[in-house]
Amino acid sequence: MKAFRLDELEQERVANDGAYLQFLRERNMSVGLYALDAGASDPQGPHAQDEVYVVVSGRASITVGTETTTVGRGSVVYVPAGTPHKFHHISEDLRVLVVFSPPES
Image 1 (spheres, helix red, strand yellow):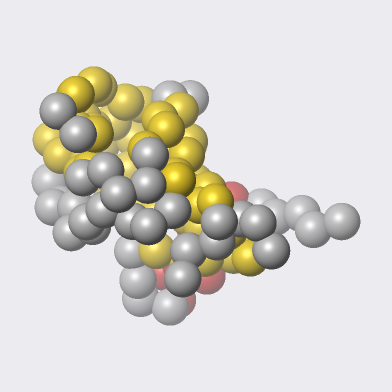
Image 2: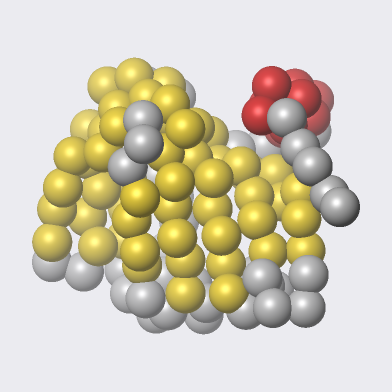
């Protein structure tokens, strides 16, 4: 079994000085913690993998393709591979679990 604590993952992400920390990589998927502070810009572009975002904390809007919705703690968003997407109007520090399938390269 592999088990993780969000507070420890956040500490490791901060120590590595990055917005994204991949903490699990298996044959068919990878999982990471993505962080964007309030007011930040989301620099990501489309990925070659399907993604699922699970918002752990914070508040923002996300646009996937041409659709936009507001997200907060407990929101789950699916992003098909190759689809442009961005978080924006980040009003509270955002922490998101990201599941890629297949694993992010």
